Structure formats: structure tokens, C-alpha cells
Length: 255
Image 1 (cartoon, rainbow, N blue to C red):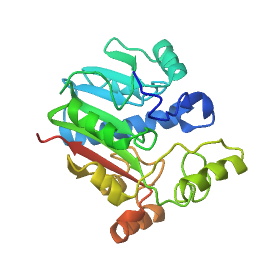
Image 2: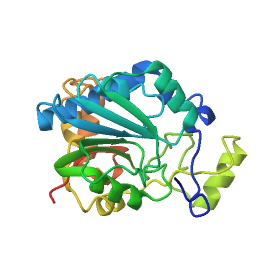
Image 3: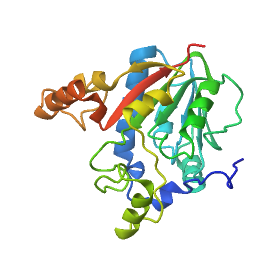
Image 4: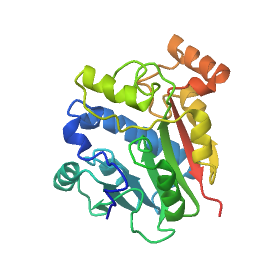
């Protein structure tokens, strides 16, 4: 399934990151509802559509997607997480597979919707990931793409300042110094590199829409409507979009 001689994979992420938010049911539910609300806002009705969840982990979000779509397929390379998902988050319209996101082995144009939430930085080659997403989407289909920015002060996975900004060899040493790990797998990109990464798609940007209406898009855990934080967030986004900590884009396959 995978050429391990060519790529260095981030295996068993769930067990190696026991304190990650991916284990928190409340957090995962909120993120799943945000995803669904964005997709419903753009596509209106999801009930007749098929979806692929890339990087499903324990299935906490995937099981919620199954309530909205006609059929959901979910993949991950994390075997312990998949075992948990199958045991605890199964549905009749949901199937889990141990697959490489860069080479899923599904047929061309198999899905109406693909969900790729903060996954691109974890795969060995994000360009191959996006090429695979493009291949799997039906013409007119969309990918919900949530992506973290390299240019952030506090790195999201290890909570170390400037970890994603420094050169890779420094990041490896940084992790070891603070006993957070031995190898920094994540490959975050700037907004300019992200736009290049998704250049095959039509991009529908929901980042500002979510900030403007956090209640509609289930983002009130980050921003309270009318709060100073919301106003500052919108100001920053308008003045320095390239410094947004993350982006939410719908990527539509036109041809």
C-alpha cells in the first residue's frame, strides 16, 4: 500500500499524541458541525451525496458526518484509531478503510464531497494528496479543506512557539529539547504556498464568512458574536490575511 522507503509516514498519531484534541468528543463534535454547516451553506442538501473523510482517526467526527450524508467512506493510516472507530463509531452507511491518503485505490470520481480537515501537513507529500483528491472528486464536487498556516506564533500540535516557522533540522532539535518527540513530521505552508497547492481547484473562501457569523457556522467556541475578539479577528483578516492562523476553503473541481 505504501512505499516506506520513499516516504516517512507519521504512523499511530492517536497513540503518540494522547493529549491531542482529537480525543475530545466535545471538540470533535463542534468541528464536525462547523464542517457540515459550511457544506450545507454551499451545497444546501447533503442527504443524497457521498463523502470521503480523509484522516478520520477515531471516527468521532466521521460518525457525525454519517448523519448528514447518504454514504460516508473514511480512511486513515492509524490502525489503533481505526480499530476504535470501527468498534465505537460505526453506522450502516459508513465504511472505514486503512488507506494511504496519497494513494487511496478508490476509482476515479467516486465522491461528491471530500473532507480534509487539517491533514495536508501530516502527509509526506501534500501535492500528491491534492492530486488524489482531485482525481476522486466528481466534476462539480467539493472538498472541505481546513488548513493551518505556517506563520503562527504557537504551533498547534506541540504548543511550542515558532516551531512551524524554524527550519526542519532546528524543529527536530526543538522537539527533543522539550521532550515532545524526536522528529517533526508536520509540513505547514504559508497562504501563498497553500494557494499554489490547490491551484487545480476553484476556491470558495469561507474563512471570513465563519468569523462574521460564528453562530451559524458553529464557531462560537472561538469567537463570541459581537465580542472584541471577533472584531479584532475580522480586522486582522482584512488587513493581513496571510497571518490568519488557519483557513477554511471549499475546493471545487470544475473539470
